[in-house]
Image (tube, rainbow, N blue to C red; front, side, top):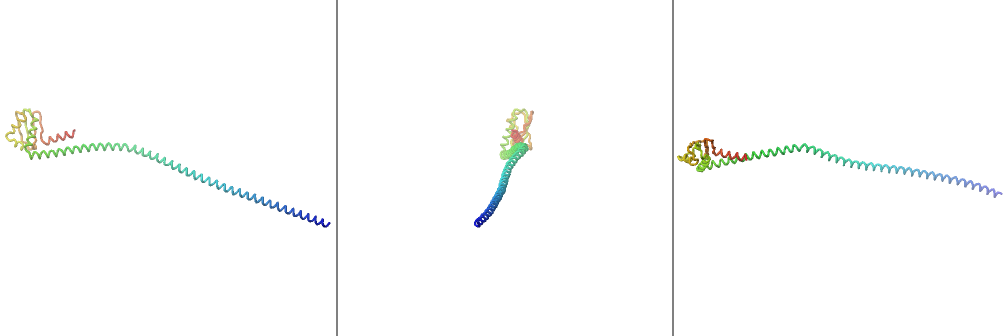
Length: 232
């Protein structure tokens, strides 16, 4: 009997032990579940944080890329606008400058033509002055050359019935008493008059006829040559 009581007590103790142990295990299970839930929540929270960070980085990169691309597009646009504006300004300046340049070119050509004319005139006058000096020097060294020049002028008045010939006194003196005969032989003139005139240079003469006058002075002949050269 006592043995059975003991056994029954043992059974009750065992049952209490088993109940105790079950509760403990259940508590541990709840703790594990809670810990698992907490850990899961932490993992989810960390994942959300990391996802947010990734999203923000991606958004920042996208913004930076878009900004750089926008800057590049802006640079290209600015460069194109600057080129277009430069070409427009250049075109406007050329439109304004071209008439002035054309006018300047025309004025330059006109001035060049005037300069050439003045240069030609100066060259002709210089040549005439040199020729005059050379002729007078030749006439001084060769008196016969003076006679030849006067004779050539008298032939221009050939056939005139009446002549008046004015010439330098030295040229007239060089002909001497034969002066009238020389004039008659050169002009076939019936009546001639020789007049000494110191204003006429040697080698030249002035011949008066009924129809006009022949100016055969050296200076006059050179002047006519110069005028013909300049007019030509």
